[in-house]
Image (cartoon, rainbow, N blue to C red; front, side, top):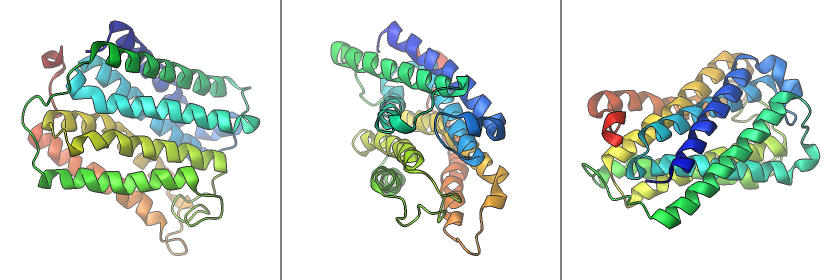
Length: 273
Protein backbone atom coordinates (compact mmCIF):
# COMPACT_ATOMS: atom_id res chain seq x y z
CA UNK A 1 0.00 0.00 0.00
CA UNK A 2 1.01 3.68 -0.12
CA UNK A 3 3.06 5.31 2.63
CA UNK A 4 1.90 6.32 6.09
CA UNK A 5 2.40 9.96 5.05
CA UNK A 6 -0.15 9.51 2.28
CA UNK A 7 -2.53 7.82 4.70
CA UNK A 8 -2.14 10.61 7.26
CA UNK A 9 -2.85 13.27 4.62
CA UNK A 10 -5.97 11.36 3.63
CA UNK A 11 -7.15 11.41 7.24
CA UNK A 12 -6.44 15.16 7.37
CA UNK A 13 -8.56 15.57 4.23
CA UNK A 14 -11.36 13.72 5.99
CA UNK A 15 -11.23 16.10 8.97
CA UNK A 16 -11.05 19.27 6.85
CA UNK A 17 -13.79 18.20 4.44
CA UNK A 18 -15.92 17.11 7.38
CA UNK A 19 -15.70 20.47 9.16
CA UNK A 20 -16.18 22.41 5.93
CA UNK A 21 -19.06 20.25 4.75
CA UNK A 22 -21.01 20.30 8.01
CA UNK A 23 -20.74 24.10 8.29
CA UNK A 24 -21.90 24.65 4.70
CA UNK A 25 -24.61 22.03 4.98
CA UNK A 26 -26.25 23.27 8.19
CA UNK A 27 -25.77 27.03 7.60
CA UNK A 28 -26.18 27.54 3.84
CA UNK A 29 -28.25 30.74 4.17
CA UNK A 30 -25.64 32.35 6.43
CA UNK A 31 -22.53 31.19 4.55
CA UNK A 32 -23.63 31.65 0.94
CA UNK A 33 -23.03 35.45 0.98
CA UNK A 34 -19.49 35.03 2.37
CA UNK A 35 -18.32 31.98 0.43
CA UNK A 36 -15.29 32.00 -1.88
CA UNK A 37 -17.38 33.10 -4.86
CA UNK A 38 -20.98 34.10 -5.61
CA UNK A 39 -23.30 31.19 -4.81
CA UNK A 40 -26.86 30.70 -3.60
CA UNK A 41 -27.89 28.93 -0.40
CA UNK A 42 -28.88 25.80 -2.35
CA UNK A 43 -25.53 25.76 -4.15
CA UNK A 44 -23.80 26.20 -0.80
CA UNK A 45 -25.67 23.28 0.73
CA UNK A 46 -24.98 21.14 -2.34
CA UNK A 47 -21.25 21.90 -2.20
CA UNK A 48 -21.45 21.12 1.52
CA UNK A 49 -22.92 17.75 0.53
CA UNK A 50 -19.92 17.14 -1.73
CA UNK A 51 -17.59 17.96 1.13
CA UNK A 52 -19.34 15.68 3.62
CA UNK A 53 -19.21 12.95 0.99
CA UNK A 54 -15.53 13.61 0.40
CA UNK A 55 -14.91 13.45 4.15
CA UNK A 56 -16.48 9.99 4.28
CA UNK A 57 -14.57 8.85 1.18
CA UNK A 58 -11.27 10.05 2.65
CA UNK A 59 -11.96 8.51 6.05
CA UNK A 60 -13.09 5.07 4.86
CA UNK A 61 -10.21 4.87 2.39
CA UNK A 62 -7.65 5.78 5.04
CA UNK A 63 -9.32 3.37 7.46
CA UNK A 64 -9.22 0.39 5.10
CA UNK A 65 -6.05 1.48 3.24
CA UNK A 66 -5.67 -1.46 0.89
CA UNK A 67 -4.71 -0.32 -2.60
CA UNK A 68 -6.65 -2.83 -4.68
CA UNK A 69 -9.74 -1.97 -2.63
CA UNK A 70 -9.55 1.83 -2.36
CA UNK A 71 -7.58 3.01 -5.39
CA UNK A 72 -10.54 4.16 -7.49
CA UNK A 73 -11.98 6.18 -4.60
CA UNK A 74 -8.56 7.77 -4.13
CA UNK A 75 -8.48 8.60 -7.84
CA UNK A 76 -11.80 10.42 -7.41
CA UNK A 77 -10.52 12.37 -4.41
CA UNK A 78 -7.25 13.29 -6.11
CA UNK A 79 -8.84 14.38 -9.40
CA UNK A 80 -11.52 16.32 -7.54
CA UNK A 81 -9.00 18.28 -5.48
CA UNK A 82 -6.70 19.05 -8.40
CA UNK A 83 -9.60 19.98 -10.67
CA UNK A 84 -11.31 22.27 -8.17
CA UNK A 85 -8.02 24.02 -7.37
CA UNK A 86 -7.49 24.63 -11.10
CA UNK A 87 -10.98 26.13 -11.28
CA UNK A 88 -10.10 28.49 -8.43
CA UNK A 89 -6.95 29.53 -10.28
CA UNK A 90 -8.78 30.12 -13.57
CA UNK A 91 -11.40 32.26 -11.82
CA UNK A 92 -9.02 33.89 -9.34
CA UNK A 93 -10.31 37.33 -10.31
CA UNK A 94 -13.70 36.33 -8.86
CA UNK A 95 -12.26 34.57 -5.83
CA UNK A 96 -13.03 36.28 -2.52
CA UNK A 97 -10.85 34.97 0.32
CA UNK A 98 -12.15 37.08 3.18
CA UNK A 99 -14.41 34.99 5.39
CA UNK A 100 -12.94 31.96 7.25
CA UNK A 101 -15.25 29.59 5.36
CA UNK A 102 -13.69 30.71 2.07
CA UNK A 103 -10.21 30.17 3.46
CA UNK A 104 -11.21 26.77 4.83
CA UNK A 105 -12.39 25.73 1.37
CA UNK A 106 -9.13 26.91 -0.18
CA UNK A 107 -6.92 25.25 2.46
CA UNK A 108 -8.88 22.01 2.21
CA UNK A 109 -8.26 21.87 -1.54
CA UNK A 110 -4.56 22.59 -1.00
CA UNK A 111 -4.28 19.67 1.44
CA UNK A 112 -6.27 17.50 -0.96
CA UNK A 113 -3.85 18.32 -3.77
CA UNK A 114 -0.87 17.67 -1.50
CA UNK A 115 -2.36 14.27 -0.67
CA UNK A 116 -2.75 13.63 -4.39
CA UNK A 117 0.87 14.58 -5.16
CA UNK A 118 2.24 12.42 -2.35
CA UNK A 119 -0.07 9.58 -3.34
CA UNK A 120 0.98 9.64 -6.99
CA UNK A 121 4.66 9.75 -6.02
CA UNK A 122 4.07 6.83 -3.66
CA UNK A 123 2.33 4.89 -6.38
CA UNK A 124 5.23 5.17 -8.82
CA UNK A 125 7.72 4.50 -6.02
CA UNK A 126 5.97 1.53 -4.42
CA UNK A 127 3.92 0.18 -7.34
CA UNK A 128 1.19 -1.41 -5.18
CA UNK A 129 -0.79 -4.16 -6.87
CA UNK A 130 -4.39 -3.55 -7.87
CA UNK A 131 -4.97 -7.20 -8.76
CA UNK A 132 -8.57 -8.19 -7.96
CA UNK A 133 -9.06 -9.76 -4.55
CA UNK A 134 -12.13 -11.99 -4.45
CA UNK A 135 -14.87 -12.49 -7.00
CA UNK A 136 -14.90 -10.81 -10.40
CA UNK A 137 -18.03 -9.17 -11.76
CA UNK A 138 -19.31 -10.46 -15.10
CA UNK A 139 -19.43 -8.38 -18.26
CA UNK A 140 -23.23 -7.92 -17.98
CA UNK A 141 -22.72 -6.67 -14.42
CA UNK A 142 -20.38 -3.99 -15.78
CA UNK A 143 -23.17 -2.44 -17.85
CA UNK A 144 -24.41 -0.14 -15.03
CA UNK A 145 -20.84 1.10 -14.49
CA UNK A 146 -20.46 1.80 -18.21
CA UNK A 147 -23.79 3.64 -18.29
CA UNK A 148 -22.75 5.65 -15.23
CA UNK A 149 -19.46 6.71 -16.80
CA UNK A 150 -21.09 7.70 -20.09
CA UNK A 151 -23.87 9.73 -18.49
CA UNK A 152 -21.99 11.34 -15.59
CA UNK A 153 -18.92 11.81 -17.77
CA UNK A 154 -21.08 13.69 -20.28
CA UNK A 155 -22.41 15.92 -17.49
CA UNK A 156 -18.85 16.56 -16.32
CA UNK A 157 -17.49 17.43 -19.74
CA UNK A 158 -20.54 19.59 -20.46
CA UNK A 159 -20.05 21.45 -17.20
CA UNK A 160 -16.38 21.97 -18.05
CA UNK A 161 -17.00 23.29 -21.56
CA UNK A 162 -20.51 24.77 -21.80
CA UNK A 163 -21.06 28.50 -21.74
CA UNK A 164 -23.76 30.31 -19.83
CA UNK A 165 -26.91 30.26 -21.94
CA UNK A 166 -26.33 26.76 -23.28
CA UNK A 167 -28.97 24.07 -22.79
CA UNK A 168 -29.47 23.25 -19.11
CA UNK A 169 -27.43 26.14 -17.73
CA UNK A 170 -30.36 28.51 -17.12
CA UNK A 171 -32.23 26.49 -14.53
CA UNK A 172 -33.24 23.72 -16.89
CA UNK A 173 -31.97 20.90 -14.66
CA UNK A 174 -30.36 22.52 -11.63
CA UNK A 175 -33.11 24.95 -10.60
CA UNK A 176 -30.93 28.06 -10.38
CA UNK A 177 -28.79 29.90 -12.89
CA UNK A 178 -25.12 29.18 -12.26
CA UNK A 179 -22.18 31.46 -12.84
CA UNK A 180 -19.46 30.07 -15.08
CA UNK A 181 -17.35 29.64 -11.92
CA UNK A 182 -19.99 27.41 -10.33
CA UNK A 183 -20.68 25.54 -13.56
CA UNK A 184 -17.01 24.62 -13.91
CA UNK A 185 -16.89 23.50 -10.27
CA UNK A 186 -19.89 21.23 -10.83
CA UNK A 187 -18.24 19.96 -14.01
CA UNK A 188 -15.10 18.94 -12.11
CA UNK A 189 -17.21 17.12 -9.53
CA UNK A 190 -19.10 15.04 -12.11
CA UNK A 191 -16.03 14.42 -14.26
CA UNK A 192 -14.09 13.17 -11.21
CA UNK A 193 -16.90 10.77 -10.35
CA UNK A 194 -17.01 9.37 -13.87
CA UNK A 195 -13.25 9.05 -14.31
CA UNK A 196 -12.83 7.12 -11.07
CA UNK A 197 -15.19 4.36 -12.26
CA UNK A 198 -13.37 3.77 -15.58
CA UNK A 199 -10.87 1.22 -14.12
CA UNK A 200 -13.76 -1.19 -13.52
CA UNK A 201 -14.11 -1.63 -17.26
CA UNK A 202 -11.07 -3.93 -17.16
CA UNK A 203 -10.58 -4.58 -13.44
CA UNK A 204 -13.82 -6.13 -12.26
CA UNK A 205 -13.14 -6.77 -8.59
CA UNK A 206 -16.53 -7.02 -6.89
CA UNK A 207 -15.09 -6.09 -3.49
CA UNK A 208 -13.44 -2.97 -4.89
CA UNK A 209 -16.61 -1.92 -6.71
CA UNK A 210 -18.67 -2.47 -3.57
CA UNK A 211 -16.20 -0.41 -1.55
CA UNK A 212 -16.22 2.36 -4.16
CA UNK A 213 -20.02 2.43 -4.18
CA UNK A 214 -20.24 2.47 -0.41
CA UNK A 215 -17.64 5.25 -0.17
CA UNK A 216 -19.56 7.35 -2.71
CA UNK A 217 -22.95 6.69 -1.15
CA UNK A 218 -22.62 9.65 1.23
CA UNK A 219 -22.33 11.95 -1.79
CA UNK A 220 -25.61 10.64 -3.16
CA UNK A 221 -27.34 10.80 0.21
CA UNK A 222 -26.44 14.34 1.24
CA UNK A 223 -26.86 15.89 -2.21
CA UNK A 224 -30.30 14.31 -2.54
CA UNK A 225 -31.37 15.50 0.91
CA UNK A 226 -30.27 19.04 -0.01
CA UNK A 227 -32.40 18.88 -3.17
CA UNK A 228 -35.47 17.82 -1.18
CA UNK A 229 -34.90 20.61 1.35
CA UNK A 230 -34.86 23.12 -1.50
CA UNK A 231 -37.65 21.38 -3.42
CA UNK A 232 -39.68 24.64 -3.75
CA UNK A 233 -36.98 25.94 -6.11
CA UNK A 234 -37.89 23.27 -8.66
CA UNK A 235 -40.71 24.13 -11.07
CA UNK A 236 -41.40 20.79 -12.74
CA UNK A 237 -44.29 22.14 -14.81
CA UNK A 238 -42.27 24.85 -16.55
CA UNK A 239 -38.86 23.18 -16.28
CA UNK A 240 -39.44 19.40 -16.35
CA UNK A 241 -35.71 18.80 -16.71
CA UNK A 242 -35.45 19.41 -12.98
CA UNK A 243 -36.97 16.00 -12.38
CA UNK A 244 -33.85 14.50 -13.95
CA UNK A 245 -31.81 15.91 -11.06
CA UNK A 246 -33.79 13.76 -8.63
CA UNK A 247 -34.18 10.73 -10.89
CA UNK A 248 -30.44 10.30 -11.42
CA UNK A 249 -29.52 10.37 -7.74
CA UNK A 250 -32.44 8.17 -6.68
CA UNK A 251 -31.86 5.72 -9.53
CA UNK A 252 -28.28 5.22 -8.36
CA UNK A 253 -28.80 5.45 -4.61
CA UNK A 254 -31.84 3.24 -4.03
CA UNK A 255 -30.52 0.12 -5.84
CA UNK A 256 -27.23 0.44 -3.93
CA UNK A 257 -29.05 -0.08 -0.64
CA UNK A 258 -30.25 -3.50 -1.80
CA UNK A 259 -26.85 -4.34 -3.29
CA UNK A 260 -25.11 -3.56 0.00
CA UNK A 261 -27.64 -5.68 1.86
CA UNK A 262 -27.00 -8.65 -0.44
CA UNK A 263 -23.24 -8.41 -1.05
CA UNK A 264 -21.90 -6.17 1.72
CA UNK A 265 -19.59 -3.18 1.28
CA UNK A 266 -16.46 -4.88 -0.03
CA UNK A 267 -14.68 -5.91 3.12
CA UNK A 268 -14.48 -5.14 6.81
CA UNK A 269 -11.81 -2.72 8.05
CA UNK A 270 -10.11 -5.50 9.99
CA UNK A 271 -9.59 -7.59 6.89
CA UNK A 272 -7.98 -4.73 4.99
CA UNK A 273 -5.04 -4.04 7.27
